[in-house]
Length: 207
Image (cartoon, rainbow, N blue to C red; front, side, top):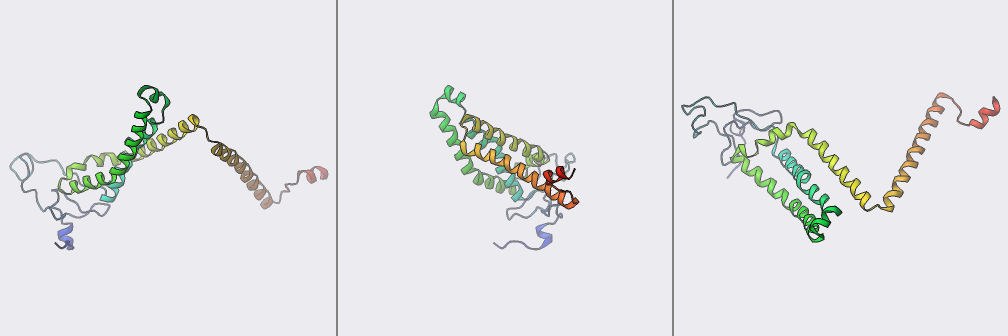
């Protein structure tokens, strides 16, 4: 089967701001938008019923949807499972074997998430409503990103305090010295540009 290339066939209703073809009536089996809503359920336009609501078109490409699905999987499932598997309090309640199982669950979900995301995207090509909820999620994407970063930081803090690492501690002290050295270098460079001497001993003798 050849892939349609004619613009009237590929995007008969035009394209959205991302360049994706609009598909207000869904997609055909070959992936191109339907021209009409023939076969629509009672209550939709063109079927003798009430006027249907304005169709919701996809505002993201399949690649963006896949990325978002994987991000949600990591934020809502993988990271929490991996985090609570290291909790000593939970370990006392359910035992080390079950906390190990939670860590293993995180790996399993992470492994199958890409295939699951691809399957959902393929389903959405014939059932546009399958991923319609992602249009709402997209609006909240900045907040979800903040939440994900916050969870990652919390996980890192908890892990650091449960099992402090000497190499990480040394890196922190080295970072502090680097910050001081950088600040000193910036001040000296600014002083030189202004013609101000940084030799305080010489300045004191001159006074």
